[in-house]
Image (tube, rainbow, N blue to C red; front, side, top):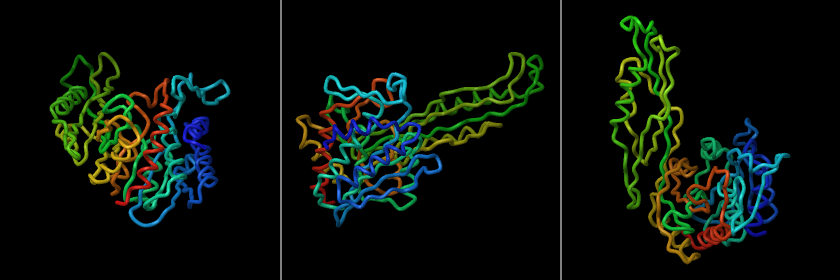
Length: 365
């Protein structure tokens, strides 16, 4: 079975409510098509996710992992039939449907490359659960001891330096989502001196956020700049009542080693700051590994790929934080994932399979 055929098989399995069936398929396929040691863990078992899937072959050092995930975000209505099956169409050299770009096409490419490669090192393929909900599977795997020396996370890196060029991302931003809560004292709006306006306190906090410097850093010669923005405001109960509470949400895009000093908002009386989610950024710390992946990518395409950076958080952030040197190389293009028109190039699926196999057969650390 080639990577395109396997993509069709994987995309046909709904995996937004539960990815257990997709995980079953990945596990069974690896057992049938390889002689590798295959195992399944219990990550996300309490939510019916079915667990991560791992396969390992080859020996020696270092350990190189090809990492993907088999969960997807909920499909658009147009991507599902009345009976609940995923709609899959092929036209104009692309395969359309939920999960084609993010990221079953790249997972299929990684599985086929793993099966066919004669690796120069220990080679692992891993498919995680719960990537779309904060890295459930990746975090569980790391807690259970998963720690390859190097990893290619097969998220999208195509179309960054040029159309249809499959690049190699050496870094990506993280995301920290937080809540600012301003508390006051309610009073009738005709007697403002009897209360404390929570919206005014929240406004003071907004002023602090607005004046913060965005964090920045450099990774392998590439500048990365984060951002901070207040994105939602909720407060007040009636036109004639001073509000006793006002809540703000803040979206921060983080860069490796840096965070905006959002705790400064607590200098405002009655204001509390709470971190709700913190998806870590990723930075490759091994230039030789990044170059080796770039060499593999360049060898199998006419275009000249480049090292790039991505704006989006991925499971590479969790692996990088745990000590694995990561890059990102995959089929998805900017704007493809999570859309009603999600699709993946058939040619790029095949290209990524060749990149992964070439790297596995040449990389010795």
